[in-house]
Image 1 (cartoon, rainbow, N blue to C red):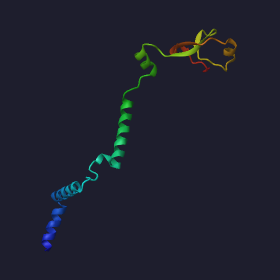
Image 2 (cartoon, rainbow, N blue to C red):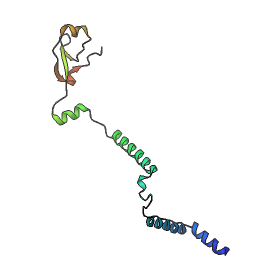
Image 3 (cartoon, rainbow, N blue to C red):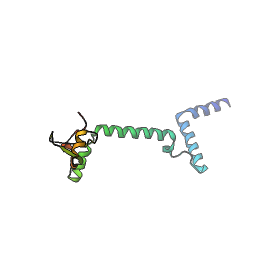
Image 4 (cartoon, rainbow, N blue to C red):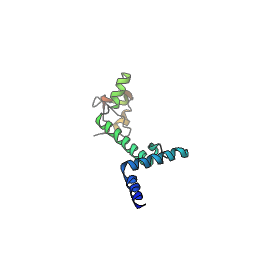
Length: 126
């Protein structure tokens, strides 16, 4: 009796024995009705790994492919440049952003016009 038990044990722990046990377990799960966790993608571990890999993939792709400036894409799509409100400073002869806190701006009370962004001076940066 001891020899038969040893042979059975050796078969069970061998590779083919493990495969047989897995087949029996899978068959038992399948006949039980639900199939248990047969769809492994819903396991929390796999969802977490998939999410991390997805975020890492998007990050790598976005770092490799440079993003265009918003102004460039707007110009490509519409054929027009983005316009901003600006006023023509008579002293500097440059377009500047409105500066309502500036005394000169308050004194002149200039009319604001829409001008392409690349023509406008920095404004409050002095």
